[in-house]
Image 1 (tube, one colour):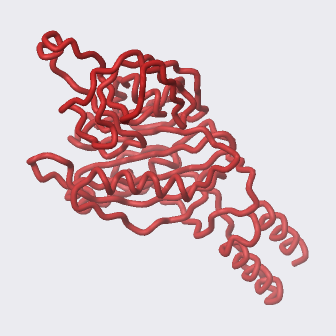
Image 2: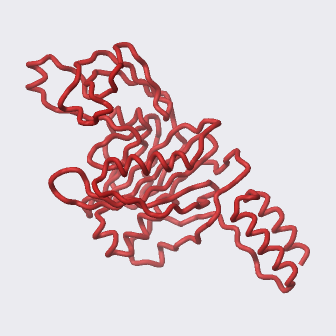
Image 3: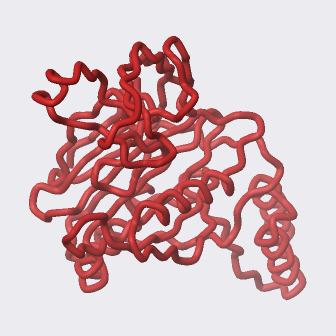
Length: 317
C-alpha cells in the first residue's frame, strides 16, 4: 500500500469527463484558431463578469479575471458562456489525506481544479474508468452537510444522461458526520457508457470533504469486491479531527466491512465509529440501552451524550 496524501494547497473540481465537479469550467483547446482570433484563456465564466473581477471558491482560493474574449462555442455550459483568461491565487489548505492501494496512480491537477477544491485525482492502473476524486470546501458557521449533499447530487444529475441517485445513507466515519449515496448515469457523448459513482461527504470542524469513487456500472454491479472497495474508500481518509461543532449527529450507523476478508486487494483498515449497546443480564438495563440508542438514531442526543450515558448504565449493571 502507498499513501496518496494531499499536500492540499489547491483544490478544485472541473467537468473533465467525469461527473465529479462542484463547479463546471470548460477547458478549451485549439491553438491555431486562437492565434487567428487573438482569443485567450481556458476558463468559461458567467455573463456580466468584467475584467478585474475577483471571485473566491468555496475552498477559499481566489480567481481574478485578466481578460475576456466574449462568448465562445467552446463554452458549452449556458450558465458560463464567456471565455476568459484568469489568474489563480492558491492560499487554502486541507488537512485531509487518504491511503489507497498501489493500483491507484495520482494524476496531475489543473489550476482550476485546485482553485475549486480538488485534492487528489487517482485512477486505476489496471481497470479502465475506475478512479477516486477527493476534494474539500471550507466549513462555514452556516454550513449544512445536507445542502452539500444536495448540491453534489444535483450537479451529477445535471451532468449525466438518464441519471438516477440512490438512497442517502447517514453515517459516522472515523468520528465524523458523513453521508453517502450512489449515482448512475451515462457520460455525455456518442458512446453510451454507464457509470456508477459512490459519493461520500464527510464533515469536520473546519472543512467538508467529498470522496467520489467510480467505475463502469456493469463492473460495479457484477463484481462484489469492487463494490465493497469503492463503497469503503472514504473510510481511509486521514488527518481530520473528527470534531463537528453541532448538537445533532447523523444516525443509521453502518457496521464496517472487513475488506481484508474479501479476495480484493485491501485498501486499508476500515474504521467506523460505532455505538453498539452491550447485552446485559439485567432486563431493565437492556431496556434503557435500547431506549438510549433510539434517541441517538432520532438525532435527539449526540454521539458524545450517548456514549457517556451508555457507560453510566453499563457501570450500574
